[in-house]
Each structure stands twice: as C-alpha cells, then as structure tokens.
Length: 289
Image (cartoon, rainbow, N blue to C red; front, side, top):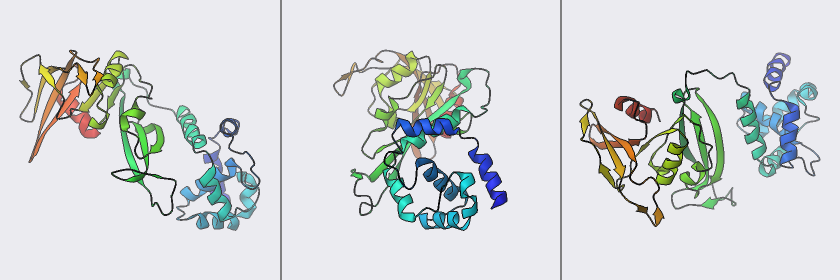
C-alpha cells in the first residue's frame, strides 16, 4: 500500500483542498456531518475507481485493510458501508461536478492557431434505473431514470462540461444554458435542432453542424452542387416564419445544406452556418459525432 499510497497521494495532490472545502461550503455538503465528511467520501469513491472495486463493500474492506494509511489520505477512521451508502445518496453531487470543472482549468491544454480549430460535440445519454431501488426517479415514456448531458471537446479529446437531469428533460433545454464560445464549432444531432438556438450560435460568432429534421421547411437559394459521388451541397434558407407557434428568428438567413448519400439508407441531410469548411469536412465532423 505504501507504493500505491505514493501514487494515490500524487493523484490527490492535484486537488486544491482549499478550493474543495469552498465547494463543500457552497453546497453545505458537511452540514450535520458526524461520521464521514465530503473529502472522506470523495477519497473512498476515488479509491474504489482506481482499484476497480465492484461494490461499496469492496471499497470499505480495502480501506480497512490499509488502515495504517488512512491518516495520509485524510480519512479519520474505518468507514462503514452504510455510512458510505448514505453519503452517496444524500450529498450534493454538484460539489464533485464543480470540482471536475476546476480540474479541467488546470490541465495543460493544447494550443491551436484559431478558435475555429476547436470542435465541441454536444450529446446526451440515458442512465436507466431500477424503480424498485430508485423510487425517487421519474418515469419517462421511453426510459426511466436520469439523463447525462455532455459537452466533449473533440480537439482536446476531453469532456469539458456535464450535468444530470431527470429523464424527461429535453436536450435543447439544457443546451440553451451553455456559454457559446466565439469561433468554436458545435456538432450535435437533430434533437438539438431549434432555429432560435442556431441563430444564437451564429450571432455569437460560432459555428454549428447538425442534422436537419424531415419536416424542416427550407427554400433553395443556389443550385445544387455535386461535390463527389456521395456528397452534394446547396445554400438554402429556413422558409417558415413561425415554428410550432414560436417565431423563427433565423428565418430567411442563408445556411448550407450538405447531403451525404449512404448505402441502403436514406441520405444524411446536414445543415451548417460554416461556409469556409468543405462539404467533405462538414460530413466528416458529423461522422465523428
């Protein structure tokens, strides 16, 4: 454990304890805490990850076996499985989300010539829960549980933002909360297709690449250009002034439609406000998504 503790200590040294405590205080994480504070909980779960523990029992047994190293890790005494389970159930998860954001800031990220080189993928994924064990979870018509919303920086190859919501929260509702970075290119599927949000990306000086919905009304501005056997493009504009009772502020603004032919499938119809990248590059960006 001594060698392992050296490695663990180095990994934990990247966390500023003062900032960690500030996050705990922000969300009142240690209120009425008697047995296991937030730091102890974090270290326990962290040890469970790096030791590939399959259960809370494995974690507490590992900590108990190496009890002589607990002081160096900031754990005051052995942890009961029920205590750790209770902490995981009741502690505010935003403490650890914000810790993640703090750690991202400290990374030595790659440098790029322009912000236009930065590609960010926006997506979500369900976390299906057993309602017998998680009675607090809300049911949805497709699945029940939670949903994770993630922004992944493809250029730097790391996630830069995430949050959790109930399963019935729409993707676009969470996307509207994001801070749009000027010059950055955002790639997402048609679940995020909202004309006014596309306009906000465009107005911020950023770019989007997404898939067009079948019922999206568009009007051609230019003739169809055949790029190669699989890819073609055309400058179009959104022709509906109103969409589902909401005014479309991106109405009559030029965008580029890129059609990608697929074997034994319908063509993939993409839409973008990036007129500098080639049609092949636009198609490749969506493929990487």
